Amino acid sequence: MDGPTLDTLISLATMREKPLSAPFALYIAAEVADALHHAHTLRDSENRPLGIIHRDVAPRNIRVARSGEVKVTDFGATYSLMVGREETPGLLLKGDVAYASPEYLHRKPMDGRSDIFSLGLVLMEMLTCKHLFDVEDETAPSATMDVKTEETPSVPLTRMIALVNRYRPEDVENAMAGLPDVLKAIVHKALQRKLSERYATAAEMRDALRAALAAHSQPFGRKEASEELARLLSEASVLRDRVDLDEEGIFPEGLDADEATPAPNEE
Image (cartoon, rainbow, N blue to C red; front, top):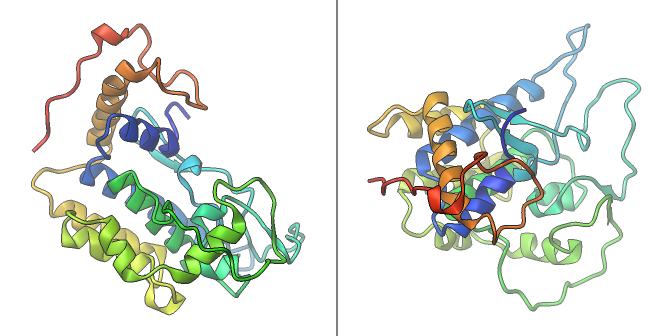
């Protein structure tokens, strides 16, 4: 797919000290929620639910094409009820635990609403360039966990579990200070600790995101997403000598630092 990962876009937005715009973040999150709803509701040839849970909804697994199309990638950590599937060992956590839901970290029963929690973390990061659990925390974990991660996590597992155990609605509110109430409400609902208090389905979250997007004065769809992506890459081109990205070919070809023209400030 011709376009960067959301992880790269958030890194570039952080470098320029300006988060992604609210419409862009809402659009991406709504497209991801729509893709998750499709996956969550898949059925087999006998019309039995497949019970798919992505389990690794994170910026690195969301890609934005230069056309503005959004794709959810890497279903390698996916859980499903498919016959013949490779089962994950009971004490092994797949995916980046920095975006894992409380129930997944504690190996409790889960469903598609676990992906909704992860998407809530991603949405907050797009809007603020901050991860909810990227905080100073010197408190030692209360106990050694038996669970293990399949890959080296971006946040140590024991620390992540301790943070998830203690986060409060006030932490979400403080992290999103200054943002419109409608955005806060969506993130708050997605990040509820209890499954029953989150959006019931990814489709419900998608509809809330699209309603918030429609409330903006100007329409925002794939075309506008493509344009904002191009502006971000152009603005960030001046940082190309200072940015260490995992992806190659992100910046516009042939655009030198002195040729990059930042986009005008948006209202």
